[in-house]
Each structure stands twice: as structure tokens, then as C-alpha cells.
Length: 320
Image (tube, rainbow, N blue to C red; front, side, top):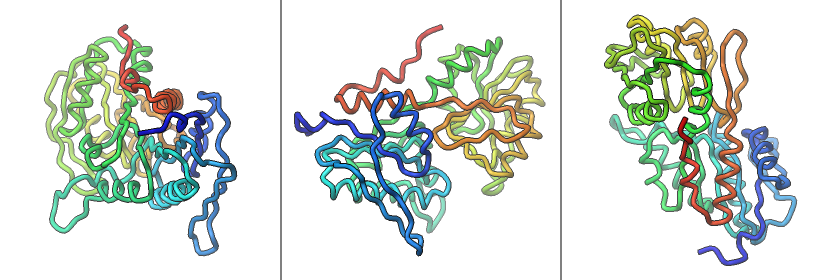
């Protein structure tokens, strides 16, 4: 239970993973960014020192654990530990992108469940709460024994897709695991729904095998929570195009494209990639991409958590 004076002073600090997003969040909140000094020792170890008093503060640390994930995760843990030892009243790890989320189960012998390990590390470091966007799997929330506020990028993405006036539209899930997400988008966009069955060849290559649903003569939005090598997206888009689709838009919450992913998208059937700035995104040359900001969404969530208000209204999308 937070004491009555515990949330009198809101403080938002940034790690080095995504300072641009952190700056946009504090600007939306109308507060000054918390001052923290972060550097590496010559051997690569991380040093953190808060340059102002954090005692009794409601502290929010903004740090997506994107590439390089190990560096950014360890930096976040050190920041949490430093804040705990400096007597911050409550520490919320704001992780717009939660790294290691794909390793959420044992799907073969002798492998780790790294998403659970990361949850354990965050709790052991002293985090009191987690704020994230579009976890790869909903069950990751259950890996934590502290509150998790799980937001969705859909409100921002759907508003943009509506503005495109795509006409006859079908939302496609590029794999069975994303069907629930695709169904939610189809309901919000009043669109049809389809799904692609796939076979994963290795970490970088995917074969789209079967399309269930009608895309012929229709515009298509392929929705997914994350992409890096774009194998799933491009394979699904090729199958969809062969089945008579018109314009194809990919809507991705977290876009962390590798060089291979960029090359695949450039030569794919996808006409536009719509993503968010949950991780740092630079638009590659020759790729049609729109980057939407989640800074206002995160700022509203931070303020509601700070004031002990509900964040569920942030999931609502006004009707057309």
C-alpha cells in the first residue's frame, strides 16, 4: 500500500536505450526529466548515479530492452537497484518493449524460459511495478508477482489505419499465435479476418503454407506484435498477394529490423509498414514506413498510475 504522501512527487528518468521516447514522455507529462548519470567502466561494467534526491519519490524508469538486449536489461537492473538503495518509494520499470518475450515456454528439451528469468531479475532488483506494451504472449504477466500494466499499441495504429480509408478490408494474422490480436483489429476496423498457416524452417526463414479467409480483391492489413528479420511477414504477404489481395499494409507494434529484414521488405509485396516508436526506429532508404509515437499513451498511463487511477480506459478506441 502506497502511503498518502508517496505519490506527491512524480519522477521520470531514462536509461540509454531510447532517450528520444523518454524526452517525449516527460514533455507530454509537463515535468522535468530526472537527472541520472550512466556510464561504463573501462571493463564494460555499468555505473549509475542519480544526480538528485529520489527518496520517497514515485519513480518511473523508461528503458525498453531492445538491441542490444543484454546491455539494456543489465542497465535497467542497475538503475532499479540504485533507486531502491536511494529509498525511492515506488519504482516502476517502463518497458515499452519487453526483451526475451519470445522465450516464454519450453518448446524443446533443455532450453530456458528466459522471459520468466527476466521477470525474476526485475523483481529481485527491486521493481515494484511493470509498465509495458504488447507483450509477445499474454501469459508473461503471470510470470510476475508484482503488478503489470499491459498496454496495447492498437489504439494508435487503428486511428492511423482508419485515416487511410482502405475500403474493403481484411485483417490477416501471419501465424496462428497472432489470431487473437488480428481478431481484435478486425473488430475495431470492421474488417474481415483471415489467417496464414506457416512452417518455421529456422530462426530467419519461414514458409507460408495455407491461407484461410477471403482476401481476393480486398486491401489487407497484416498485424503482428514484433518483427526483426521479417520472414513471417514477407512470406505471408507473398501468399496473400497470390490469392488476389490489392494493397497490403503491415501493422507492427515493435519493429527491430535487421539488414536482412530491410532487404526482404524492400522486395516484398508489402506496400506500407506501420509501426511505433516503442524501440528506436530509423526509416531505411527505399522502404515505405510510418512510425507512430506511443509517448502520449505512456504518459497518460504513467500519470494514471501515479494518481492511483484506472488505466483500462486507455484501451478504448472511439467509434468511427
